[in-house]
Length: 213
Image (tube, rainbow, N blue to C red; front, side, top):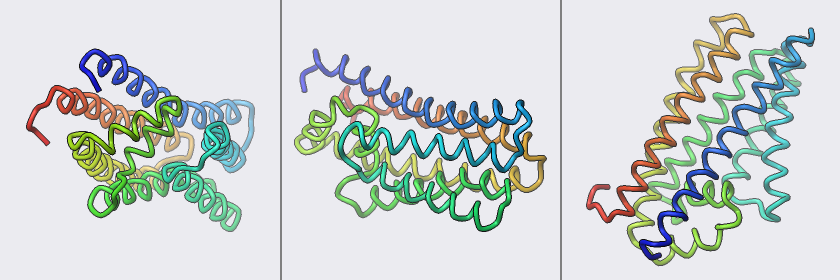
């Protein structure tokens, strides 16, 4: 990839990543508070929010006509969350789904960074930017710095997501559900925003040819 094309491509990837994260966070929490303000109970409001989040992942997979590893992990975890919610009938169990998702995805990030040939950041970027999926794949296959960058990014995302999942546990069980929902999503925004910001910085560093990482 030439220096002339790297800039627009990098900006497109960053924009796709931020849009994807925004939809994954804003849609579920917005749906919850809208339903809650209309008098819907916590359990049903959280169930609807979870359904919207799962539908967003499924729609992305259908739109791109492929179910990549990132989407597969997300759908499995959402399915487990639904099962637990129906078995227990507890709003806090649905709220805990967020920790289940971030913790599980964080673990997959770490495993693919250490042992996998395809770090999860590669699949995630292709999921967020399907129009550039082939170009991202080609860069990963042909540029050693890109492969190293994905492994480092996957490790950092893994540690960050697992840490956020663990911090959410006392929030879920010690605070009232409406407060826990808001604080939980604030935590998600801060952590995901921080990781995305780090990823942007690190991507620029790698593209500039720095020996760091």
